[in-house]
Image (spheres, rainbow, N blue to C red):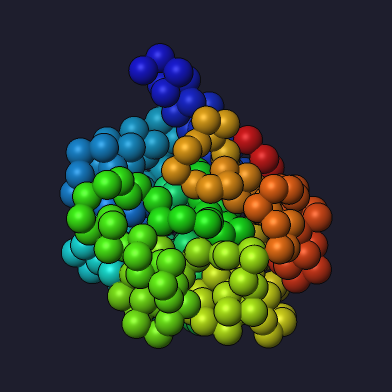
Length: 264
């Protein structure tokens, strides 16, 4: 508990510095929660309130659909579209805002930065354990029947239209030994990482961030590999060698941002 409080204090200090550096008022922030979570859950409401109180910045948790269920079943192109419309409707964000992504919520945040046409500007992006370079397995699943079914679908046809449309995490699963199928079938991650078609608009928007903070948990056993939080990933065709971000081809050539880049 003490280490968690220490982390929150450090995190808030970083966030607070970003908020006061641009203007005299505090830049508002939005939170996107992870899989199997909800803005109504106590942990998320406390997290948002603490950050708001300690930083002096107004904070909002933006819910996509019904929260828990849709975090599993709604594809990320749709989640991004919903989030985009919501931030456009929030007058509080009209002058710009910061994004805090928690785990899978980073995919929605990334989608907003790169794909939200006509939305308010995103100033800073703070990511906690985000699967930015992909994962090799669905997070937070155990031995329950539904998890057995999920694992079966992934092994059978993770990049099929049906799985991509009905299992949200499949949108950022990157099987490094089957990259052709990944690039052809995965409907979200290859787009925001500019792996298929080099979209200069996506790159420009990502590069326009003033600060990008990527936080990795050293003992993370949910994201595989955990280095994905820093845009690191397996060498193409291998599950043995993990490359740092600067050596991952899509990051090096297509997603290099000119914002200030922090690894924590």
